[in-house]
Image (cartoon, rainbow, N blue to C red; front, side, top):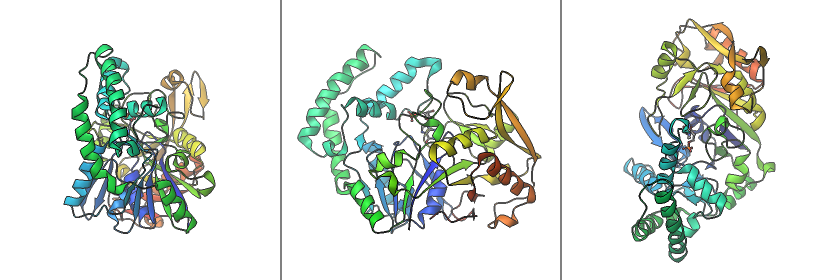
Length: 427
Ligand code: IMP
């Protein structure tokens, strides 16, 4: 019985939804601990595609408890939409629990996110414009509204009045944007609060009791290591911590209770939003990966930038997260390429860097140093045993293991839950 943290090792969109869905079979609890509806998980079950932004993908298993931890920022309107969508599909949400300590994304957060992105112009972060950054800003500034406050009409009204007065000033005086009407927001959110109330529970207590009882717990990270506020490509990052350490803070569990950390890495790399990306492919090959891998944002529909697998990035993620295993996704997308490349290091002013630099200026000047391996032609989407992969595909995986120093436990060869090769047990 164990606890596993699953995180993204790149810039998000590594296919965590699929791996979470696969591992959730063996988990009793699935816990989200950071981010908000900037995330998007696509899960394909029996050919039907589901998109979730907030609710853990464990919800598709009727017997799993799904938690939204205190570290998540919750847009109640989005949450209620997801609850309704799941109900319409006949999927029960009775096992969902939401932390009263989670912060709430308010309409002014969304508008501030938009306004700030527009103000930045060409140097915009490329956020999802879902209000994530402004919600975490208020949390750190100690002016945020938590779920527990939302459920208390008196407390909520007082905090909302205060916030709206301040945000309206900022919106009009700094951004020249329209503000919000207190009464309107109040009545809408009090209505949403009643939809959420039945799900609210002390999620830290739930998870700690589950651990004590020897249950399997899966902590599901959103985004990826390079979008981490501390460890990512700042300022082109999100405002939370998509790294493994955050599972403790964001779920209310001690570090001594975490058994294993698994990093999800796509067999190539994608990035949405701005910022340097050394192994980015411009032109035909990038387009090919985008089309084949359906690399368009789940949340915003934006085309993702595509590039070769970057071992510097994943080695860095292995260090920051203390990775035990990798889950390598979308290996099938590389089938049919005459050769495949892995970025082994960066050439910076004549020197080869093997560690990920802190300075974005340095990163922007880095040229990828590639190793080129022979490709494979076979369709691998039906392969379920590692030994049945074409020799060149195995060679590619083995080189990734050597360069990152992390063993591969799972390999994804298609979008479906069962299109997964298991090399090591994770739970
Ligand atoms: P924000 O999280 O909306 O503030 O966006 C900040 C940065 O994180 C932008 O580059 C976004 O494109 C990126 N981002 C946020 N969530 C995701 C995700 O789930 N996948 C990939 N990129 C994301």
